[in-house]
Length: 214
Image (cartoon, rainbow, N blue to C red; front, side):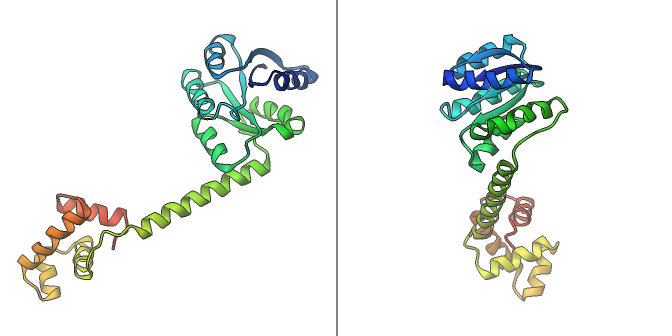
C-alpha cells in the first residue's frame, strides 16, 4: 500500500516513516510539509492513503481534506494529529477523512488503522469515537433547544387559530369553533403571516409543522 504523509514537522514525518517501514508492506511515496504542496503533489504521487496532520494548518488542513476527497474520491485520508476534541473529529470526517489517529497513540493504532483501510474500514480509537458521539449528541441538544426557544411572539389566540389550520380546518370552521367572525380570523392571520415571515396559507402551515410552533 502506497502512503503519502503531510506534517509540518520533519521529525514527525521521519518517525511515522520509520514506523511504517517496520511493517514491511507499506511504501512511503510522498512527504509534504505544507498544505499547498500536499494537495498538488498527492494528485500525482499515486498514493492509496494520505496521513495528514491538521494541528498547525487548521482550516487549511480541513480544506485540503475536502479538496483531495473531491479530486480523488477513492483516496483514503487518515488524520493523524494531536487534536482530540469532538468538533475537530466531526469536521474532518465531514470533509472526507475515513480515519482519525492521535499522534500520542500512533505506535498503538497507526499500523492497524491502515490495515483496516485495506478492508474498507473507517477506523478510529474508542476514545475518539466517544468524543465524536458526545459532540454529535451535544449539537443535537443545542438544535432542539433552539427549536424549543424560538419565539415568534404569537398570542394565545393566534396559536389557537394556527393549531386549527394545521389540523385542516378552514377559516369558516375555525370561526364557528371559536365564536368569532371570518374577518376576525383573517385579521389574526395577517399578523401571523407577518410574524412568521410567510405569504401564503401553505407556507404558514408548513412552517408551523416543521418548527413545531403549535
